[in-house]
Length: 98
Image (cartoon, rainbow, N blue to C red; front, top):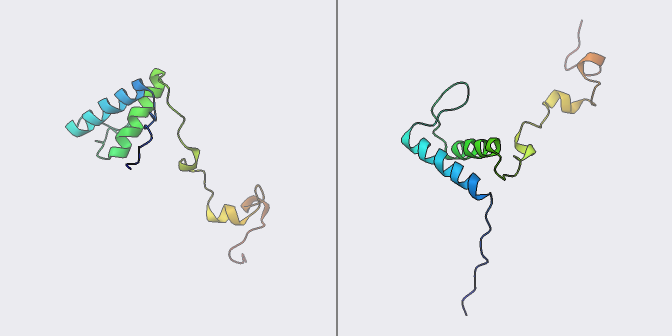
């Protein structure tokens, strides 16, 4: 007996999908540029991100970007020290000052 696939659900709204499609087409044609730098976009993932961002600006229904990808990590030195008590408090010294 064949197993039926569950119907796939749309990840984003119809308007957002069309915007992403437009941006992908631009990227393939070599016309899609990044923000301030104006460099040509060559990454498929970057083109999708730009499309979703543009759709958000136009008010399409798109979920917010995942915050775990947006530089939420702390540096090694900062993570070794308790918050707010790092270099300024003089608690962390990787070498002895003379």
